[in-house]
Image (tube, rainbow, N blue to C red; front, side):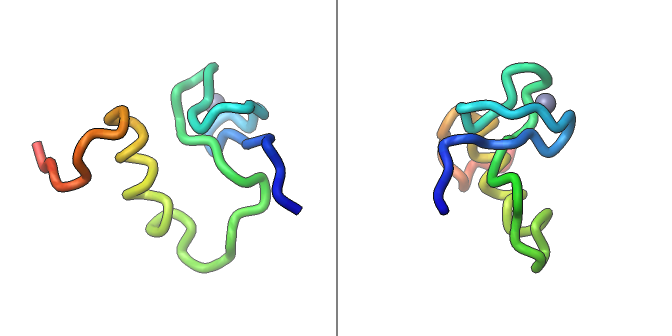
Length: 59
Ligand SMILES: [Zn+2]
């Protein structure tokens, strides 16, 4: 049940993009896994926010 639709974790909008076009927050599966979703997607979200830059960049 893979969907193209992503749901913004911040404002709840649905979008086809990985990042909410309305508020810029990470958008993902409308039904995230129960286990530590914040931690699991934290790094991924930050990576996306950097436009795919190196995840090792710390500054
Ligand atoms: Zn949003």
